[in-house]
Image 1: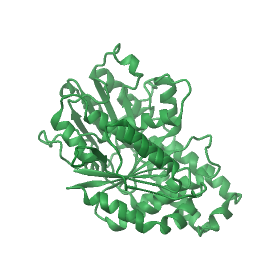
Image 2: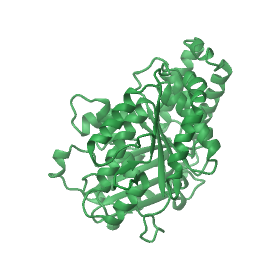
Image 3: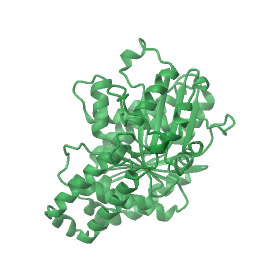
Image 4: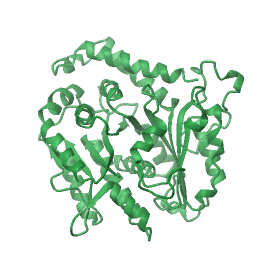
Length: 443
């Protein structure tokens, strides 16, 4: 089954390009016919000349990034974007969610819908749609939200996953917290699941684990693409009977987003290291999974700095509110293991009922996928996709900063002139504060 990606804005297009690079390199690595065929069918279609063409639609209100992405893909020689699978304009959204959502989105609705429809019709079987976007600026957040709304109208029963890149907390755009709150509030009504990468977290991975001295957005995007690829490439579920052809987005959503109030997904991957270090490193499943489990519990995205003091509460404490607790409670977890001796890996530590909410059994809350095929040159790697309290603190901070600006009416006029009222802001704050409350009171 195939996934159609919709790359929106500068960030969505840059991350999308890196993702297709990872997916294609991995699928074509070595003699792995069944795996390669499943991976290629999922993300590419082939021309009569055997060229791999990404199942993607590129959208931006300025042409520069799309032109760069199209050119880089064509030059790599492994894959390319469709020659008419993109749309851009001459003028951006000015980092204004309202401009993207109320002006650019509706103005270009027909052409965008036609581009997506054409990609969908190329699929023998559609697994779902993945919209990739940032929440900081205007096009990714505003146009991205509008496009997601249109896709939900056209494909009401199709799985839609939104991949969001959250901005640096120190600020890339002065109104980024407004844009983020408005985006999340609307997507919560539209998307089946929302997979989040925080720039601050990925930046630390680049510096502390990959030893990159001068970190660029390209470096950050490569880490995000590696983690996304480790989720999306073919793997086997417990009941797949050795066949890769299941619905990846459907399985992901059903495993992790079983309640409409809880849709936020975060990612941990282990190991993460410079390619020059791989040849000198050895990995064992027991050690990797022990570290990954503690990363989950203590809400740490890197092996460095794991807090080994954090423990799940005893059974007698499970019903108390965990608002002030450092323990990261999960609603559901999906563990994806790839590489050598993968079927010998013992995953029982993730089945501990103490990790999860009391109203869902650990058998329902935990799932694992496995593939004996190594991924992205790692002999063994493990990725944990978690629906947990991990994003609670950054979400709370984002809403707090946006609320402080709103209380002083800072920049509100820039949104009102495009048709977003103060009432719209208040509705969005209320929606996200409800999400925060729900995650805070997981027990």
